[in-house]
Image 1 (cartoon, rainbow, N blue to C red):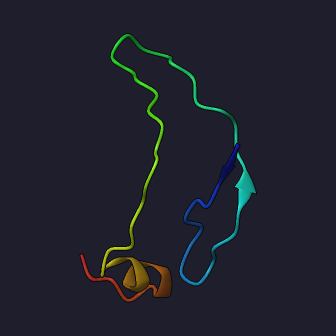
Image 2 (spheres, rainbow, N blue to C red):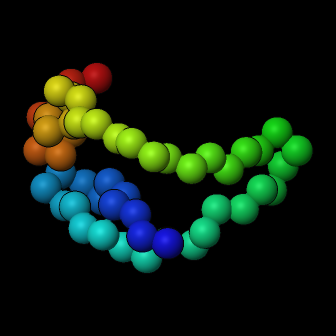
Length: 51
C-alpha cells in the first residue's frame, strides 16, 4: 500500500509500505476515509515544532 511516512524535516514522499497485519489480540486494522491538516503539521514538516 502507499503511505507518506515522516522521514524528517522537509522530507515527504509517497512510499510503498507493507500492508498492516494483526499481530496481537488487542490489534485492530482500521480504514481511514478522511484526513485533515492540523496547524501543527506544517511545523513538524519544517522541523520547527517545539515539544
